Length: 213
Image (cartoon, rainbow, N blue to C red; front, side, top):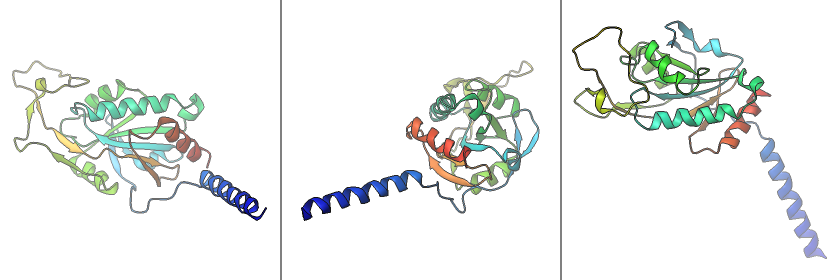
């Protein structure tokens, strides 16, 4: 009898712990994130505070990324599609380029639009981008000391459009970069660090939790 009571007590405590864990709010990540200025894909100056009141999923990358960035944005597009239309109005997916010299607002808009026109692409000066990278404790680095390679040799989602015919070969830099997905609440605080390996339903549940806070 005593053995049965111990087992029942253990099961009861376990269920309470599981229930409590499921009800826990996401923690605040101190020192990751913050306010910044940038330029959006329409060439307009924006502040991160402009997105206050929305849940934000922020990532870093660049348009000449051959595999990781398209995969990440494809994952984010799938994630976004799991939300209802009403939920989508309360969520903003942001892609920050680490190559602002090549990724002009117009080209960034074309690239982002390939995945979802609701997503926001951010560029700016190198100083602005480096500041944003530092805020989120992210990293990027050129892969080659040769600085640039012909873009015709890069497998790209959207080739850059040029307004004039130029004989000069289009070249760009290749980078390694952080692949973290930053989940940010409506007040601008980072609440979770995710990756494309995070099950979509699990990520969506976290987003919904922040929407309802």
